[in-house]
Image 1 (cartoon, rainbow, N blue to C red):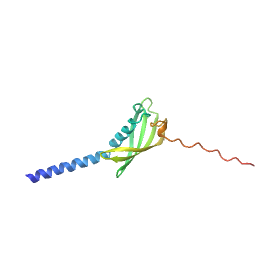
Image 2 (cartoon, one colour; image 1 turned 60 degrees about the vertical axis):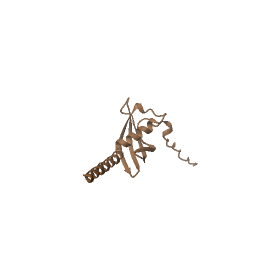
Image 3 (tube, helix red, strand yellow; image 1 turned 45 degrees about the horizontal axis):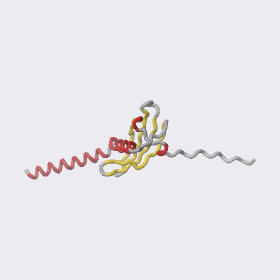
Image 4 (tube, rainbow, N blue to C red; image 1 turned 45 degrees about the vertical axis):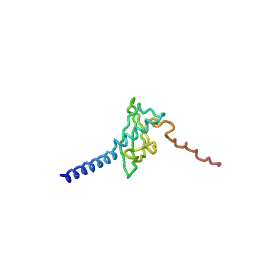
Length: 127
């Protein structure tokens, strides 16, 4: 009887541990990390956007996510952002983000993006 109780307890602990690991490797867990990251930033108007996480690729303790932010005022206005995250215990944390394109401004404000350099004019011929 005691052996049966120990086996049952071990099975439950193993199943619970696997379930937590599976929950960590989900789009929902990554989305929660991105939302937490954005809510910490004073320069982001997160309440005016809808976050959609399209694709997440997991590799060990890192994850790459493709997200789209849509304006709540006009769903035609959107911007794509790629995120690099790392595992921090039982949750994910954002390491960095890069714009992926779209219409409108980055959800990270002016400080969160880098603008491409202006094109340099072609050299003029002296002929």
